[in-house]
Image (cartoon, rainbow, N blue to C red; front, side):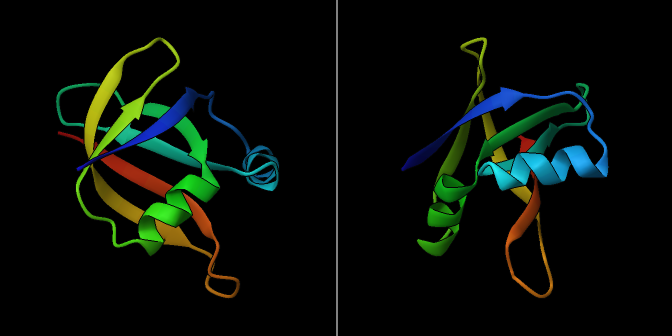
Amino acid sequence: MITSFQAEQRIPLSRTGLKRLRQVGRLPAHIFSAKADQVLIHIDAKDFERWVRNGKSGNVEICLENKERVHVSLGEIQRDPVSREFIHVDFKRA
């Protein structure tokens, strides 16, 4: 089963900018690989939370704004230690 996340590219933001992004329901993330530059993105936090709650199984596909589809695997998830909310997620290009 393939899970798709709609993503929008973003520019590097300060700590305050990332906090604002999270407040509107977006989760900062990036896609990295050994061969290509990293891509800074943000995805819907609720969709990601639902996927994690259901077991994080299957392949992941990131659909970027320019209609490019990137197959990725989950790299690292960062969570707030107190609230347990997602702070940031890393994806590895497959």
